[in-house]
Every structure is written in C-alpha cells, then in structure tokens.
Image 1 (tube, rainbow, N blue to C red):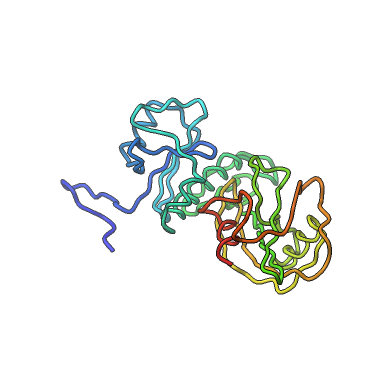
Image 2 (image 1 turned 45 degrees about the vertical axis):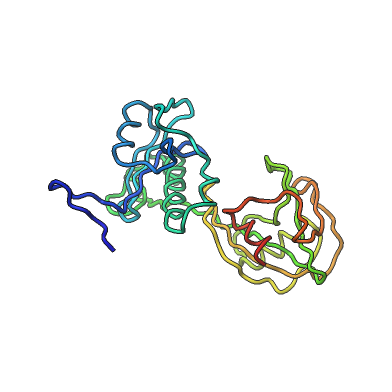
Length: 262
C-alpha cells in the first residue's frame, strides 16, 4: 500500500487523518469530507483550541475546540456517533482513537500518586510524573453489553433511566475488579432485571469513546426468574419479537448488531 506521495519535493502522508473535536461532535467540511492538514491550520487560527496533539503510530493529528467555537462557513459540526454507522473499520478506529485520546488528555493532567503536573512521554502515548516517575497510559473502561434470548425467539430489551433517549436497548454495565466478563454479564442481568441466564457467549467488541468504554458484546439464554427491575437503573423492560421491536439503538453500535444479527 502506498502511504506517502512526493509532490513538488514535499513528502505528503496520504494515510494520515486530521480531526477537530468537541465533546460528542467533530468538524467536517460542508461537503461532508474529512479535514486536511490545511483545514486544521485554518481552525487553529480562528478558533480557541483546548488540545493539540499528534500520534504518529496511528497516523492521526487532533485538535480540541471549545463549545463556543464559531466555525468558518465552509465547515460544519457532525455528531461522532452518526459517523460510526457509515465509516469503514479503519476510519472508525482513527476517529475513536482521536476521541478517546482527546478525552484522556483533558482529564489526565496531574499525578494521582503525588499531585505533580504530568509531562509528555517522548516515545510512548503516555504521560509521566517528573517527581515520582509514575507512568500513566490512556484509560480504557471495559463494559459488557448483552442480548438475552428466550426459547420462543423473543429478546430482552430495557429502557434505561440514565439514557437521554427514549429507546429500548440491551442490558449493559461496567466490569468490576476481579470479575471475568462472563461473570459481569450474569451479575448485571440479575441486578437489573432479576433473571438468571445460561450459555453466555462472546459476540464481538467495539470501542465506544464516550469517553473511554470498550464494549464487550455477548449473547445469553434465559434460564429462570421473573422480571424484577432495579428502579434506579431500569424504567421498563420486556421480551420483544426481534421483528417488532420498539425504538432501539441505531446502526453503527454493537447494540444494534446484537439486536438484529443474533
């Protein structure tokens, strides 16, 4: 694969990706194309940046913008979540990596051991403490997400209290210290819905950088119990026919794949 072009004696990296991000949005050109190095330079001049970094190993260059940023007329804000439904795997990786590293850098400025200000590591994607030699790498928070099947073909979907959308989705939750992913699946389902499951099987994974989750997808089979909802987590849950589901997650998420592909 050709990675570089030589144009007028200048080496151009044609594989590199350039991102301008703020919270859950990224900047695209008005024609929906991704940014170039020149676009990033334009935005640096007209907008205040919160972060500005490059990771050569991933071929990404990223700037963080403030919520108050006023974009020039040739640019637009687009939800990052929307992009995951249309991008290929490599572009999804680059965007997820850019978003995750941006959030990590914003939230990792001081040493958690001694409180000193952190410095950039010269060769690693990491920050280190010059006072106590603490080395901090980007944080990943593993989560499980699971669709439960009944013998009659119906699946368990729930409406979550903390969601800002009125949709029904899979049971999901963070892994706790000492747990295997399979144990987390069993615990989360029982805690939130009161049922027990069997035959827990791995399905796939997805980086979900909002801000730093790694979603580990599973399927499981209903074993026993009646629905008894954890009120502070689940507002409603029921068994649904896959061909007649209520409003559910959109394409681009592992939740969508679990519901419609298992």
